[in-house]
Amino acid sequence: MSEGGPPTANGLPLAATIALILTFVLTASMFVPTAVGFVSYDQVQTAEMTVERIDVADDGEMLLLSIAFANPTIETVDVVGAELYARVDGDIVNHIAGVRADQATVPTGETRRFHVRVPIRDGQVDRVQQALDSGNLVFSGNIWVEVSNERRTVDLERSSHD
Amino acid sequence: MTERLYISSARARAAALVDRDRIIAAMETAMVSLLLGAIAGMSTFVFVQGQFTPAVVESWHAIGPIVVAGLLNRLLSRNLRNGMLISFLAVALAFVINFTVWLAPLWLSGYSWFAVNILLPVLLGRSLLSVIIVLPMSYYSGYFTAMFLMPSSRR
Image (tube, rainbow over all chains, first blue to last red):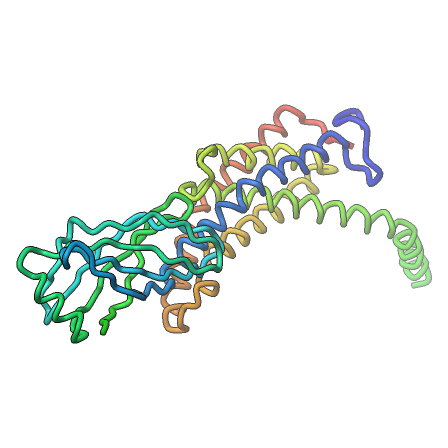
């Protein structure tokens, strides 16, 4: 018993036992958020992103999509961007670089709606209006999300609307 | 023949007398191995998957607890043999913890059995490769350092 200080009731040295428990708590506090982020980063790709509503703005030059995002992970997920293609009969009709998504923070297990602004190319406005009326407008692409500060893309469900 | 019987029964009586101490010692060894293995396993995972840690923690900080676990292994073991037993159990548990967390998404994300069949050996291999160097190196460097600094056993 010369080293390690006085023993605890079960014979282990007290100082080393306290150090053991403190190290365990410290490590667990690093590990839990890391493991939750690791699992959530994989889980988020199973999320369903569906276009719920389409509003027309700026005389048809801008479409406002309302997208529902049900968070399937065990961590809060941030929506940070979008890369969307609006197609009519296979032709892309939107400015790809101008697509903007509102920032949204979606807690675990909840559903939030966010808006994506999709600018329409010059000369395609009439075509888009007709496609909206007849249900020929098809959206596809990715939503950019962040889980534990790591970015990843989630597929938008290929969807047409009428 | 008689003598042998006598010896064996005496051994049995002696064993029964020290049984309680032996059980306590075994439980001590098990608890210490469990906690040290948990520390080493969790730290190794934080080191390998550092991009998911909170921003205040750099991934290499997680090497610290692994080395500390090795040091504590020396301080919390009765003798050399007991210390080596604890280190084997702890490192084995640390490997198992890493495998478990690496494979957890296979079930939590609801992959099909076909995808699981493909991904299971891939993820097992990746998790093994990611920890097989850093975990034993860090743990036993701490253990051997403590052994060098404190050559006499604790009790």
